[in-house]
Image 1: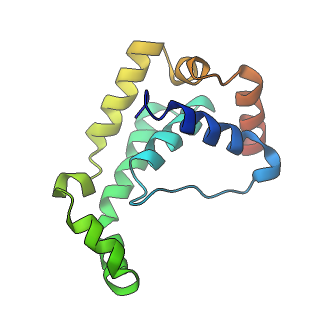
Image 2: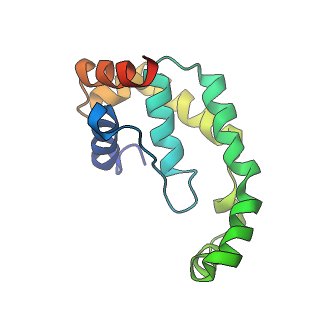
Length: 134
């Protein structure tokens, strides 16, 4: 996802860094994988500790049963697509996010190093931080 999804992640990060686009909501089908990576990028680059990001990601796993129930009620066609996936695809184990962050830190030195490698400059990160932290 970090490699193949880099162009989409870069664009999403830039979109969130533009104060005119805030407040914003972002999500994917189940709201945990692509969403989790983008959330980790945002949170890490504005200074949130890795263990907090991991704990935040784990909340998605705890809420998957509620998501499935809501889909059964409101969008059964989407649930059919989810039912075709292995059960592990619906999980959000905290270890998955920890492994992602560990990989990024080992490969790029930090999440900031990763976002820089996909074309996000310090001024974009600063803009995002100013919008979210002020």
